[in-house]
Length: 472
Image (cartoon, rainbow, N blue to C red; front, side):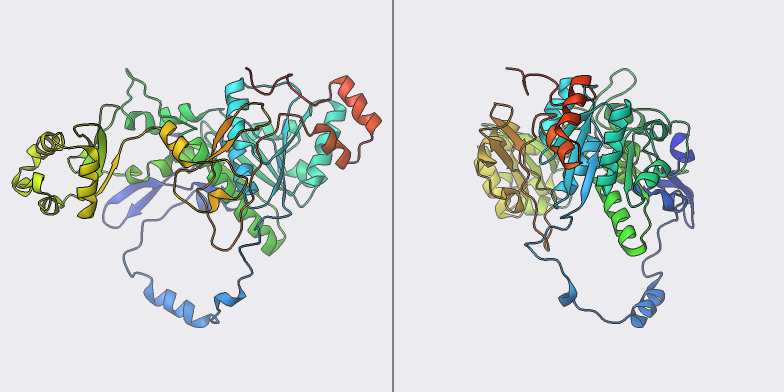
C-alpha cells in the first residue's frame, strides 16, 4: 500500500502486458516530485528515432574541447556542506561529495544519541575528511550557532522523517529566511515523491530490508528472519543516491538560481538493489531464484565448487558446456543432462587443486576465482601511504592508518567506487575525534574566546564526548 501511495512503485499500462507495476525513482527533487511519482512503460526499440534525429539536427555541433574539467581540478572545490546526519546512509552523502573537494562540517549534539557502534565505528569510515562541532541546537545560544552554520553552508544534509524539519528550524522556508541560497538534502527511510502511510515513520536498513523483500531474497521468512548487512546493505547505496540528488540540485541552482530539496530514501534505494525483480503483472511467473545461506549459486555453471584443496567460484554462461570440453578432465561434459551437470562438475572439480582449475578455466575465457576472506584482501591490498591510492588500481583497496587519531592502527575501505576521468579526487584524512574542531569552527564563525568559553562552561557546546576516541 505504501509503495503505491507514495509513488515509490509506478503502476502503468503496458501495451502488451496490460496493468504493470515497476520500480519508481531512486532520487528526486521536491520540485519534480509530481513527475517522479508517475511512470511510463518502456518504449519499443527505435520508437523515437525520427524525433531524436530531428532534435539532433536542430542543435549546433559542439566538441569536447570546450570541457573545462581537468585531472588537477576537483569538481566541488569551494562547496560548503553542513552535515546534520547520523549512522550510515546520511553521512555517506557528504562523505561522497567530500571526495570531489567539498568542505564538510559535521554537526552533532553535545551528548551522543546513538550507541558507539553506529556512531564511532561506522564514523571511522563515513566521517573521513570532515571537521566536527558539538552543539546543543535546542538551546538559545546553540540555535544561534546553528543559524551561523546555516549562513556558512551551501548545502545542508539531514536524515529523518520530514515532520522533524520544522521543529528543528531546518525546513526549506526556515532555511531560506536565514540563507536563501542554501540547498537541503532530506534522506529518510520510507520517503517517496508523494505521501504514503509510512512517510512519517522512522526506520533503519534492516526494517526496510524486511518490508521490501531483501530478507526474503536472502532466505528469510516469517519463521526465519534473515538480515543481509555488512556496512549497510541499503544504507550506502542510499547515500550515493542522496549525493546524486544533491548534485542534481546544485546543477539546477547553477542554471536557474533556484534552490530545492534533494530527496532520497532507503525504500527507494531498496528497489535498485532488486531491479531484476522490480516488475509485476497479472500472469507473471514467480521469481524462483535460489535464496538463503546454503545456496552456492544460481545454477551449475554459476556457483561455488570445492576443489581438492579449497573452494572457488565459477561464472560461465548457460551455453558454455561445449567450451568446457576444452579441458581434458572435463571431457564429456557437453553430453551431460542439465539435471546432472552440477554433480558431474562437483565430482570432477574435487580431483584437482584450485590453482589448476582457475588456470584452465581462464584459458577458455570462463571466470573463476578462489574464495577468500576480507582479512586476506585487506592484507594484500592495503596502502600505508598518503598518496591518492584509490584513483587507480583494483576493486579491492584499503588504507591503513598506523597513526590514526584514535591511537589505534585502523584499516579503512578505500573509496574507489567512483573514479572520474576529468577530475581529481580529494585524499581524505582520517576521521577526527568528535568535537575536536568545535573551538576552531566557532572562531571562524566570529565568536570570541570569551563567548566560546562561556558556551563550553554552560554545556551549549562541547569539545569531546569522552576522554578516549576508541576504547582500549
